[in-house]
Length: 331
Image (cartoon, rainbow, N blue to C red; front, side):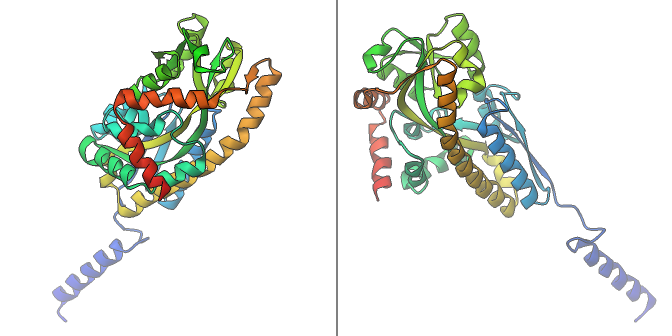
């Protein structure tokens, strides 16, 4: 072999060695960062669950995909974040089907009154062809990639300064809701006047009597100190709060396939663990709030609320969507 050929062979060998995994001269694989936003406080179970998700994804991708978790809406309000996501930003958001219903109408049923009542029922929804179709439409037509919706925050109840046992007891009360049609119509159907308001504005809103109450899950109450301004916890269980984790479809498609799998699979795992933990915590939170003077109203006429809640689906014209998902869940 001539000296020139030896030189070429050596150069090629060096290039192959440099490209080998773990080689000192290897070209580094592109790294990705997801800035993940949620509205809840740092003491909430969800925040801890999101941090667990982030840690597992980082470990599984050897640092190639990093999730930075921001609590208390540090990156901005939910609606603004969702629009940034649609434009392709490397931002994620904990949201719900009520807000996603602004883009794909039918999916809003998943945050409607008494849609599901247990974590096990929510698990069945993941296999629903109808829901899968809505999720695909969110990604292809609206730029919103659903990573998973295994995060169940618990049942929502009305927290007020008067006891509520039937829908008529809510008459005249201004109840804070998120700004999405299914939330608004659900609260209206159940008997109250809905008031759209950001999560962080609720405490001062109650102090200033801009609203008369809120509808939240048990774990939100001590985290937001709402027991300081509200006396009654009315266990209506009117909405089982299913949360969705969404990212930009454009950003998601840029991820290597194994990174996509890590993001989705660890999201589901952390979500299911967090959901179970929330159920376990609710009894303790409930007992603690009773000890601090909050009155729990448990003799609620649930059947009356279910009948009233059906009007929300009718008002929004999504009764067929509801029926389709429920058929899927019975299969």
